[in-house]
Length: 320
Image 1 (cartoon, rainbow, N blue to C red):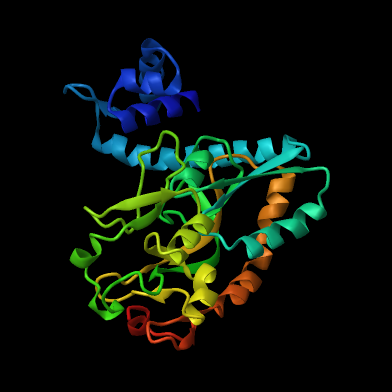
Image 2: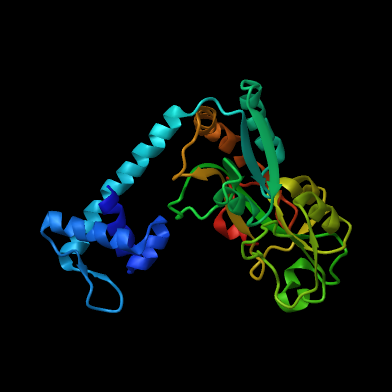
């Protein structure tokens, strides 16, 4: 396994020194391990003639099979670690800024009431903050939107949130149908601050060149928009009542169509999870269909003021 790990690291990095750094071993140790593997197999796996080490044709074929074996060994190691872990004394869960709090906390309440010996540490993070905590090892689970193609993560779909651009009545001196990016430049846009500490900051829906003010969370953002201090995109579940009562007006249209985000429960695939964390995962998995059904019928109000169910709207209606 040591020889295979060294060979894999050299194949991935293209350098014995980079592989040694990656494995926290010395250059001579990695060089010797790969040479020993080639001697055992009676195969030349690496072409050392160039500036960078390259795989030979036999090396490419062997590396593909070796990677599968290494993944299986890593999975076995994680499983053994899980078996050796006792009941966790605490779990760290990050709630993202687009989570419906009532449904999210209700989901967690039932589980942790049944596990009083495990302390729950809840954190609130926005934009990139949940991902950063998870990848920094500071969270066991996040409830947020993710890049579903990221192979480091496994996830459970919970619900879909529609983001709607809204303004307070009288905020604009022209009708919503006349909204364009150019005309919105003079009006303050309210955006949420990214809570990530060292990851590159991300912004969504920010109108380039516009005046803007920043807030810490969606509750503050909604109040800012209601008070006519700015406009912004809000999650549908937070503005349904306000749209219905015309205390907020949707400006969704061709220029500002809004967006939808899938909120998921996500955790690291490559790390071991203790018995309580594993039970929590299975618990969320079992209740996800019920949670989806409970949030699917949330009503929103179109620009014309008529109430519609999210599940009944067509794609065309979403962009009115």
